Length: 190
Image (cartoon, one colour):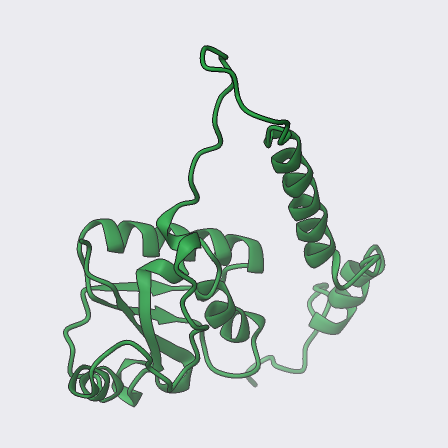
């Protein structure tokens, strides 16, 4: 006998799961992350409004009032939102090579096992570093299925901090992860 049917004093998986699940409480809000981000954005807007000097007549010649800094170039030029499969701003040959997986992959980020928050931070750090190193094509692995990261990554790439660095995104070829991964084409530094 193999001993599969024997119980030698050890709880089976279901009993163990019931004991673990006893102390679990449901989340207060499924949108807690989004609510916190909205509060942070609102607070940042208020701080920015407080720092903007009031427009009152002419400024004195020798006043020591700090002038507002001009907006960064990324804010001045509003790029169209990125979507998987559409590539405004790149030539057809480059787009075809990206879609077919023919561009050399110079970096890879695997987001398996990340929470939404840690995945967001990891993506920002990875894209920033890749862009700074002059990399052109990177692979972001999100995993297949209906995972939250798979839908969140394209949205994050459209954020104002990352969008100026990204030219195009495409689903990867099967050999590189298929629909569970994205090719990201980064802009050249000028």
